[in-house]
Image (cartoon, rainbow, N blue to C red; front, side):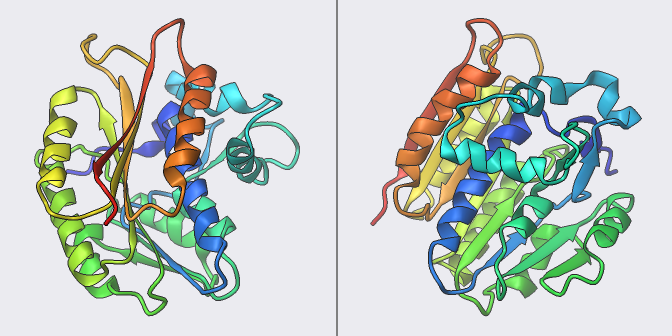
Length: 281
């Protein structure tokens, strides 16, 4: 059963982290003239109304994008991310939050393409309405993992796969690892970005160990934690693993992670991590 609905969590600290890193990756792809393709396997609805009942229930966005909305003096990377959020809110009031499909679409150039897959039957119509008539975007109602077989390798040969499941099913990390192996086999030069939650340290630690042992080169791990990992159950932090990271992404994240922590932390709690799980060849 597909029970997860991102509308309850849109714009929270995990979204800020994930989408700030995504903008960094897309800006690096834009730096070269050749076209690229973005494949988003768990696309969601495309955009989210922060004034809606689901978003207002716990107001998670207030401790996420709400912390950045009126901030001045942000780094260029975080400023770029915030600018794309502001384009959806031209009256200056924070209402609409872009999901990863809307952020990716904003950074496409003529000739670049975006492929979206989503399985939840309630989210797919919203996603299709968001991008209806847009020739740069394809939307499939499909299991994103299974769809990779037909989407890889893309004709552009450059680009990014974003794996961002809800982790609501047991064995999700196993499915992510299988997808990573498939992508590496079919499109070894593609960038892979994997978001994951840290509710309990053990599952993501096991996943990282298996990635280390996979033989796949160039695996960078970035994490943002806002609560001690041994504290009571809850979303303590999150991470993004990037395979084939663009040149000097690690340097950028080394600056960005402390900035995000300073903006989003609660009291004196919090931690960041930046580590190569496998070095570049």
